[in-house]
Length: 243
Image 1: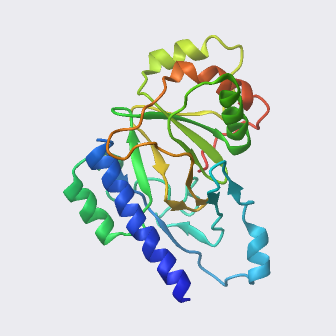
Image 2: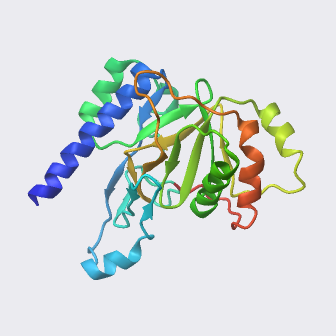
């Protein structure tokens, strides 16, 4: 029990530290996510619980994303598609780079997921985890430089430079078919950053930011989209965005 409490305190400190780095040093607007609460009802036995979650995901750097099957979203929606991994109160429009506000948020809600508002300073594109792992291998093979990449048990998210809908549309029009398993996080969107924990599990860096004092270098959407479309072509399409 003591070990668990120490681990929780470290994660709380890490969340606040990560939020301050994003806001103060990188000028990336952030806001706390809805977070999780215990699932109502009887807790299943430990042996059964281990079978309920997705398999843990180990990245090249050795970090592991761990499922959290017993937790549900703290928002009022019982069928929340992204449990814990979305803004709730405050909403996305409250995202800020003010370190005083960020410190106040995570001091009062130390376990809140770290939500990054996309569009102004950074954007993203995400895809299913298996396709994401193939994409990273493909980029390494041809020597494409990547920025930070977030891994969850279900999806990989590549952070890129901000792009417009027109720019994205022109790039996608070059393909006969684009899988809907690809998701685009531009203006008015958001992504969740490590070391957050959501209803799908804990997030980690598949490719961590290199520097903390300055904003990470980001690739353009045009340099990655063709490979992402290709590697996602075998993944099931779907309408629900799951982190």
